[in-house]
Length: 316
Length: 308
View 1 (cartoon, rainbow over the protein chains, first blue to last red):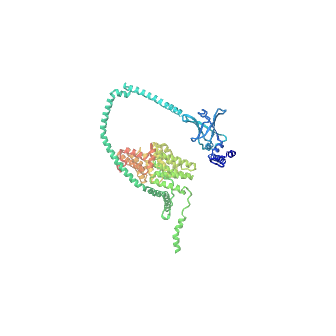
View 2: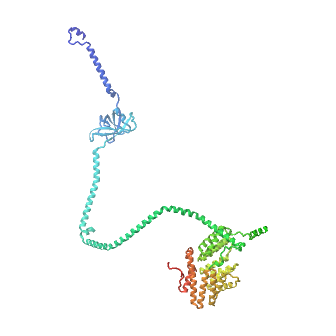
View 3: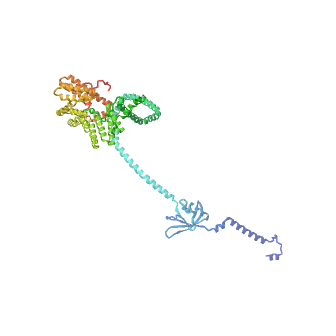
């Protein structure tokens, strides 16, 4: 190229010295900037970090519409995809999930998975993982079990069945009651039973009227007694008043009772001793009297005291 | 001179110190027993028979405690006499039997005294043949007062039971007693003599019975007095003086009624106990009722007010 330019001998309109070098420099600069942006955005880190593998044991009732490439969500956010759905030799199904490494800390041993539909009853099925709180997961062989989300349609059907089971017997009872009522009213109209007789027979009404008249007579007779009772009640009232005043007096006297009882107790405590002393003193006095009587100096003589009662005291 | 005065002053004291001999030990040395017996005797003398019974029972228990047969026999005898005085003859018989047993097992005997009390109790229970038999046993006692009282009880039971031979025997014993006789003995003698003469000479019998009643009154033995008055009434009635007989019955009835009433007031416990055992026994109350009936309806308690 340098040779061509030298040969043409034509002076170019715009002379750029070292243009090629400058272009090369810009290209290199762009590449460096791109590499820096890539490093800064973490794309490389994402590429370099391998995804976590989680085995999800599927329910025995089926996969619930899960497909390979299906979405896996954690707390409502995308957290991975279903890589494959497999069947093990024992007949259980399980799905292998490529999990975003960022979601790994949230998945614990007690985490569970629920198979949901995108629009509750329709739409694509996805796997929703629950945040766990137990021990950390052993990521060399991470397994959790999945349950299907309850189907609202099934629930509505079960509820309707319950309502039907409750209401139908009630309707049957109501029908039976209405039949009984119908039969009763029919019998009453026919004059059967007490109420029926009351409706159809005037005799009972007449007897009731007669009883009411007798009752009036009895009440008239009771009126004088009522006056007497009133007098008795007045007297009773007065008596109760007296009793109340007496009990008030007694209440007034009650505070003195412990003191009185204390005095009596103190006095009576000495009584046995006093009695014993009195008895001893009297006995001694009697002995002394006997001795004095027997002293010849005082004109007496020794009298032998007999312990046995005289025969003349034996009184037939 | 001074020495003579001193001898005159101290002489009597020295002499009094020399007098008397040491008494043999007895149950009297036990103050408790002695006190119970003394209290029993005092209560008996005052007519407080329930108190006397309590005290004598206590003395009998104390005698058993000291294993003293003589003391037990004496306390048992006194208890039986007190029960008899309290109109409890059935209790008295039981007590005599218990006292006999207690004395026997301890080698003591007071058979005549027990026989006398049991004879008197049997008389009250109207078991006259048994009473006569026991009293005749007691008549053999060496103690004159006891033997004469036994003769009296034998005569009384024989008279009530219609045993003229026993009555004569008792009368012979009593008439044969040598003076001096106590007032009680004289009264016993007169009453039995009156009973012997009741059929043959009622006038003389009435006189003797009146005499006996007077002696009993002087002796303050009112139960015996009222019975003598009733005997005098019976004799007077047989002699033909019905009015005087009624008067004597009335006097006897009033005395017996007051005795029963006094027992009721003074000694409610005795009456309460006695009321249980009075069926078929002679008590002051039953005697009063019987004699009042014979007197022809008199007021037994003329000085009492009608406030009852």
